Amino acid sequence: MRLPRIGESESGMNLPGDINLSMALCVWRRNFTVYKHTWVTNILPNFFEPVLFLVGMGLGLGVYVGRNMQGQDYVAFIAPGLMASAAMNGASFEASWNMYIKMYFSKLYDAYLATPAQMQDIAFGELLWGTTRALIYGAGFLVVLLGFTLAERPILTSWWTLLVPLALALIGAIFSLMGQWYTTLINTIDLYSYYWTLFLTPMFLFSGIFFPVSDIPGGTTVAWFTPLFHGVELVRGLCQGPLELRHLGHTGYMLAVCALLLWAVPRRMRKRMVK
Image (cartoon, rainbow, N blue to C red; front, side, top):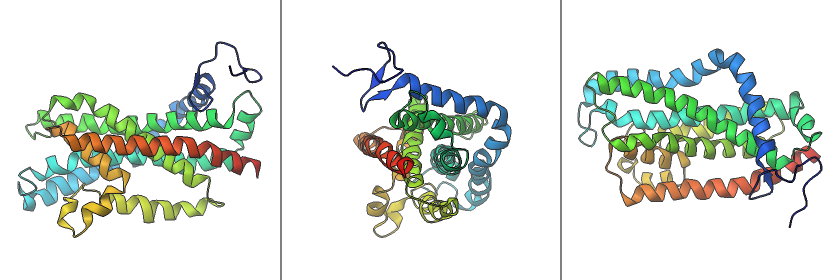
């Protein structure tokens, strides 16, 4: 039987990894409270970037591509992938610059640690918040796609679309954890330019959003190791069907990476905070 931590009630709910859910939710609530006052300026750039890609490439380039993209209208082909990328952007922004500022500039994590909260609670709370932001951006994009569908540009053609928020949450979780991991490795905020330019942007371009990765020699093999590829394939399958066994494999890949990072990130954060 595990003894309660100082300041922890006997009835406190603990998750695997000794995560106190009550403490993690306090971290989430603090972020939500701040976001309520800044959401207008925060949501615009990350939300409208994929929407502009949808309009510019889907309706612009789509005129020339037509229905030659795996028998689909080009807008319908790229839309699910752009929704997955919207979730990626929302989670990545929160787990990169925002988290670095809270950890190193505002010393917010030092304040958290002066309470009964432990590092694993803080990491899990930030994970919950990054996933929430991914859902906000992804759900907003889903509404846009619903408008296209109602306007007789069929994009959402499967009842499995109802499960898309779960896929967006999984994408948000994996990119939140990846961003947290990178944040624990760097010593200056300027190094995020490498993370976005050399890691996230290539994934955005070569994860099957704009064209099948199988068209590039060895493209499928390389893309398999990138989490966005699995997110794109899963969201596309849910939006348009039919679901196949490979979609279960995509889900399993992302869950496995999340589990590994959920174990590793608090340990890395603890080492950085001790330094």
